[in-house]
Amino acid sequence: ATWKRARKSLKSKQDPVEYTYKEECLQDILELQSQNHIDVFYGDESGFSLNCVVPYCWQFPNEPVCILPQKGKNINVFGLLNANGQELMTFDVQGSISADFVIKAIETFITKINKPTVLVLDNAKIHHAKIVQAKIEQWQQKGLYLFYLPAYSPHLNRIERVWRHTKYLWLNPKDYENIETLKTALDKIWNSFGSSYQIKFSKNEI
Image 1 (cartoon, one colour):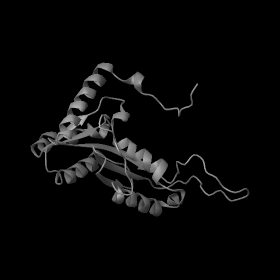
Image 2 (cartoon, rainbow, N blue to C red):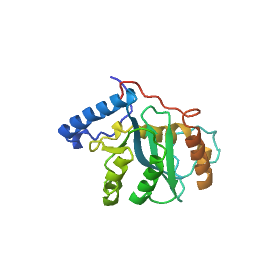
Image 3 (tube, helix red, strand yellow):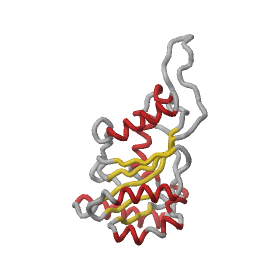
Image 4 (cartoon, helix red, strand yellow):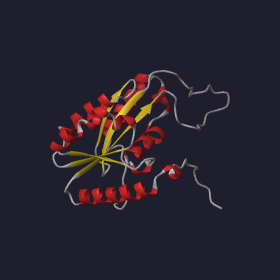
């Protein structure tokens, strides 16, 4: 017998035909990226609250509890990570992320691309909103193309690893003192991503 971390699986909800087709398409997209024909970025949203995700910690007997759940404002982030894991752009807001917010972030992102670029997104409702769909042709004229992952396939979105590393490895308990300290810590991570904070993807990784 072996021990391993239990994970939720969404495989039973996937359409196998759609999954296989889009996985092959993504492989082709990444191959074009590896040959420097295009750039590939992964986009996604994540929320950060004052409820620390650290499940266990050590402290001395009779020492006051150092981490307490807190209610308060959340910091929600829309991020774009390049396929090599070397470049990260983030747009944050205290409050919910709307389709209009995503559009404004993508419009800013477009001004920084210098070759045909594929933006990989999941199937969140805001990514399929009518106002987003109305922008697709205009974005394509500027060199940006959207590629939607197969449904229920978060493991194919590389930026998910950034969110996990941030919550479970890079943020410290002291960063959850209040919303200001949390934002300061997140800004430090985003600004130092690629140097102090790194994620590496293998060449054959989807």
